[in-house]
Length: 512
Image (tube, rainbow, N blue to C red; front, side, top):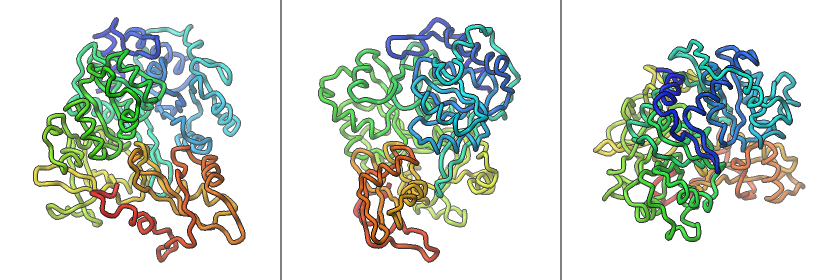
């Protein structure tokens, strides 16, 4: 199956239905399809981008973000979405790693686009509804054909390169093919949602993350993507009352913020029949309160960039009358997904014992852009290493208990300590830095830095946080700084992060 064929079928089956809502504007399936055709023809013919070329997309949620992405797919390009919350250095590194010579930016990203063009003189910058830095692709597309380009596509063609980080903080791009992405669509429909024509899912999280994985399943079934520019609790509640969505996609931090919104208990949320959640563990008290407000409408997923949706899922019915242990789990393996727990040698862990989660599934990435990193990611037989530690119960439910890496998950975003430590270490007053995740009721974990200052130097928390934000995204920068005399080190001189975080996690049901 091909992504372009899914787009084609959705447009054919549901032409005049509303496909996208954004603000006060709508686009039908036919309008999205024709605009994406014009964009595809502009990219491949007008701008000369050959099939298989990489392209960077620095685009926030908007009315034209989906047509632009579809256009890139139809042109046969390897699209790499860039998170607008990342730093200039991170964006530059990503563009260099994928070898992109072209970038499309949204109207709110013109300043960053200009800065990237100054750093990368060979980068061609194109706007989406903005001609302040380069030409506006929407203007160029007005003169292009709206006929489907129908370029040759194959199941094994790489169509997406999605960035994540390694345990060392190294940015790496997971390459997904037509086949793996179509498998994501199948598994979303089989395990998480069953939309009907005319039903709506509300999107507030960035569409470059898991939220975007629901667009094509809804598109194929004739559902609507109601898109907000970002997440604001009050605006989110207002959008539910205005658009009457049937389904929401939330991370636990967003749900926590909703409960802090004045008037949430009196709001009309009755249209909501499905709430999909994931990206980080859901605190049990929060889930129990959510079940009390909405009832049994929750579906949980567990996935990662390399194997997005879904490794495991906990169905609606499995939330009803569930034990505390069941609600702490991430469910059972999804259809088409094999899951094993292994020890440090790659051998199966004994029954009932914890082990690293490894999996095989058709929605697993082809590999990273770096072959060496790909080799490290897979065990013999094609088993993908997740670096998460889990335990199965006697009914096959998987509970995440720890990580083999020091990765921090804060508000649904992954943060790797090394990249934050490197940013802090560049400050002239810092002798040593170690970064860990400490437990937090809202964010799940908060990025916290332990700092040893150089003798005779001084720096306060605000200065170090501001310095870190110059080099990494704001969500990666420390939320707190603790000044210490020493940081425990391993025999080879690396910070023992677990020794720093351990006292703060004692007595908790899980260490993530």
